[in-house]
Length: 511
Image (cartoon, rainbow, N blue to C red):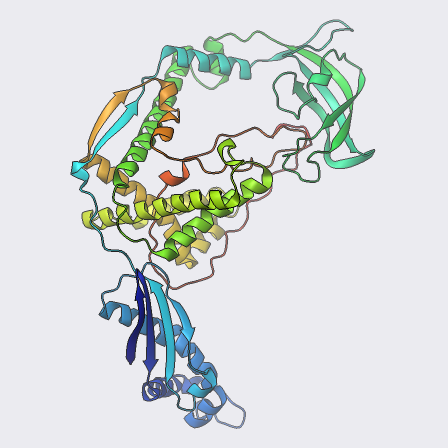
């Protein structure tokens, strides 16, 4: 075998590899000898087909399988190992030889292109100083949560009097039929729907037009679906809901007492308060850890002097840009990005992609040096958790991961990242700084650290008639490292079976 390095620029490498015909033919003859006892051809006794005839009839097909399944991966692997090359990307293979000439005695020549891992020194975790904001759980916070629980669990009682009218806070029980241009549309009807005026659970104008309604009223509610409504066949369109009022109910007094706790499955008000406090403690702890991680990543992202594998950066940018493009298409860009050109946005998000890749490489380097590993039990636990998201299809999801190493690598990556972060936080000097809950959950420090929000994702699809809530963007894009993937034989990953669709819901019914 002859290996020639054709190009070496930055982290990119190109090798031309030639396997002599005699070696190729020897492997082909050995493979034919191996399969000959199983070959069945008309005119020959089983297992007695001459090797020369098998080669003539099936040689090209056998050689193709031999190259793809054995020679190519083995040759590439040995080439990289002999040169102590750690690949950062799956090698791109270009066949130089005519496959039809290989059986008759031609050399097999091909070229591989790949990016290699950069050489750099990772920061010493013991020399890092991290500030971790922490917040105490305050009584006012628990009181506010109790008031909200009391409101959510309140009962409604029908208003007395034939002419009792619906007011803000009242629940109106209605039947309705939705129409577009006079035609009933699918999912636009409901019976015995309870609409609480002022809750904002329905599209703008729906609840407001029920103010003043009385039991027995026949009302036409004229509304316009929001432009950003998820169901595109309804977005921006005018609709009429022919509505019959069946009851008008006023909220009954809901006291914050032991009875409230019992309705929620707890023994007493004190046990409810304790459960709320524990929940807030967990929330604060998780947020403090997330903020400490963000500060840690900023501290690790000091050395920008080493090259980044272009393949990794491009792949990470494509992942981010796919999300941004979706946000542009559906009008969910952050306000700070709305007036920027596509070129400006691409430049900014490519910088974010570079940061992700750089941090992923640094964390991987630290993890390798510290012996951090992800156990099979941890991977199995994560896969099982993912499978639980697909009720009734858990076994299919587990089988999908069993058959797809690349999918397992995607499960492993975030587990590995979090374990490395925990390792570094244990060694670094971490100083706790007491702040308010508002400060703990604010994003002001992101402005100071130069971080940037990702594009907002479109809200999940809701039932017709229900208003799409504006959701805050999730964790900052650049605060998430791009996990280093272990090069593996490339397979086409198939998605797990889709979740079962929930039971069909009526238009305005709360999902």
